[in-house]
Image 1 (cartoon, rainbow, N blue to C red):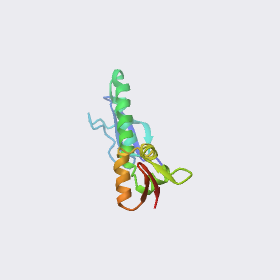
Image 2: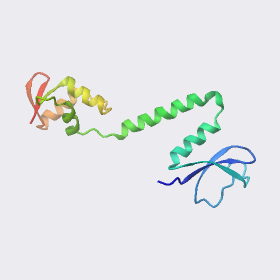
Image 3: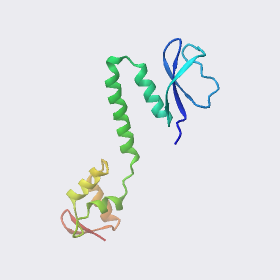
Image 4: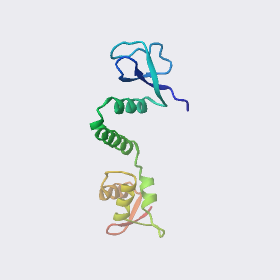
Length: 141
């Protein structure tokens, strides 16, 4: 994939800013100086934004900003992964076809879900996906 976002440095105020590569006006949005130099190219606007953010903050707080950006990305990734019943059950089932409350919790943890294992098991049982063999022990229907 070809980079489409540019990170530019203003020749006058030295601030960094981003523009799409097809933008006609590459003037600095801070001081309106018409001349700038290309610092880097990025595939998407988020990566360009992160590069600009890092460059425009004082060096003393760059590490904190990097941690905040990474934390935000991690949270977005966790939210974006959907947890569906069959995936959880496939991960939670052992070689003998047995599913326990602990294996369900491990599967939910692996899929970065905050769902409670007991709630999941209760729902799966109510939907007819699990058959109870003993307390906290099931097999797939």
